[in-house]
View (cartoon, rainbow over the protein chains, first blue to last red):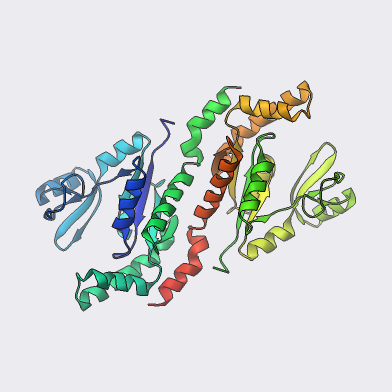
Length: 204
Length: 204
């Protein structure tokens, strides 16, 4: 089924909901999916691999790429920049691949303007209490930081109305299967089936 | 998740593709789905049950229902009328149910005008050769009838572009599971999740 159009999948959810765990399971279970790797100016951590976890670049390089319109969207967190490189996404889409992009709510809005056909999935906590306990259990934030994160999470969850699909992350494996089912079903759309259909019709 | 909006699912496909077999499996595997039962003026066959296979009515009653705008769409085949009653569909949708309507391509167009949110699935033969052999194996048609059916099938298949999803019926069980996956995934849309989301957000 080559030459079918590719598909861009935006994957969002509040901090602490478990996006990374679910994404890891997804890429483990379906090797055909293409993961978009972000650019960042923050320092590489010891367990991280350049080109796998992130593309680690200097601030100068980052800004040069932004100026050259090679970055789809970017944002600043804690004095570091994070962005989505445009080139690989366009290449994969032209090859008919399913590209998954982990992105926060505001970045997703920008991407939708550039790729109106992008499909978006919002990963939802089973409850705010559960989200709070997940953030607390990480132990990386003080009380003020936790309050701040929950406040942002609340604002983000309200934007789930902009998303095509909402998957509840009660259990990572179930959430992973739900996302894979969404991708499976998206393959039944005309856009992804047109080669098959042309084949059926031409033999008449 | 009561009070969520219902969902109307239009199910089409060319004559001979195996719609009835797939639908039977679907309703067997998921007892929550609501099957819309058509009105017909044709005679009841011995193995058919009124109110299960069809609502069998006289031509007078049928035309009265049409005049009273109680029929969503209707068509004539072999001097008999077939139509979709409006009342039950509206009732089920208001109850938040998933209603499945077997309907031919032109009827589906009419229904979409009345229910723009209806989701439509087109059941596709794996090939025209396979469709021809399925029609021949039925043994209900002479050569002219077979040619006519194939000609109509070809026209209908071209309209699959109007459908949200296209499922290939290579194997009835697989096609049934594909349709059930589509329904599962449609339940992840905001429209069907809004009660859940309100519940999560209100507790902040």
